Image (cartoon, rainbow, N blue to C red; front, side):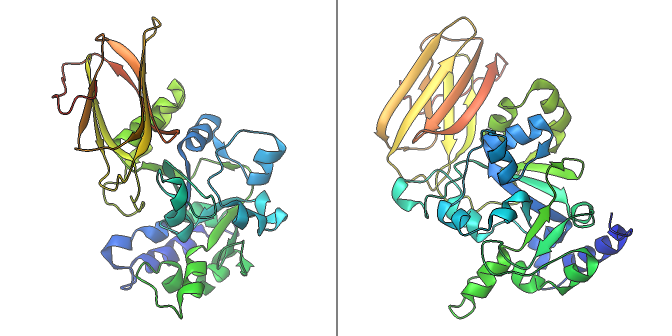
Length: 330
């Protein structure tokens, strides 16, 4: 810690949380710093036990799903990619541009995070850590840097936490402020990680299915759903819930499900049974949607891909619950 400043940083963050301008809905924002990433990356972070910088991942040739705009990345100084980058807030402009499964013509400069997962770290634990730096805007744009309580107090949190529609004359400055960052030294361990947040029950099940058994046991209580609706924009396509039984799969999707989509659903079991459902230019209506398993299974792995992106993955083992049939696809 920087000269034992953590308690002072905690007090200042509490003061920020009590600011009338934040309101009740955002009063908890100052207590965390945020990292969002694609679900496979999230699983890798939890399985390995730390976050790495972009440069470290590239140098060590580790596989990661890149959700960023390559245009923005090209404007970012190489040295800035040595940091593990977190934000002071959720719902950043970057997240707005890349969250959700989108049609190719709706992508912003190629940025795309089909299934995002949020990591919420204790803010005082990260900000007060030796070596942590803060910025007043995006590292890809003009910004100031500093560390410790003095610099923290100098930041314009009215702009950083701004979450209302923008007037044209203020848009550039506030958009940059919303990107204010917390830069942690690589690697960043998970000792200050408090919550891992998914958009829906289906996406939580997907993340859990990608974790090793011991890692899932360690983090299961912290893997939660954004029930308050404060972290994600929830625009574009995602799956809300999937009900599984021996013979029936029922899928409920987001209201913003503009298609058509290329859909693939694969059911496999340990004995080699495989059933594949594939449709091109498939339209999800009505909602929910059901499909019948041709040969009922007591246990199986199911994966759903939409436009080639993972939208759901989970394991089923027989239970007393039986899903009700809706609109059978096959």
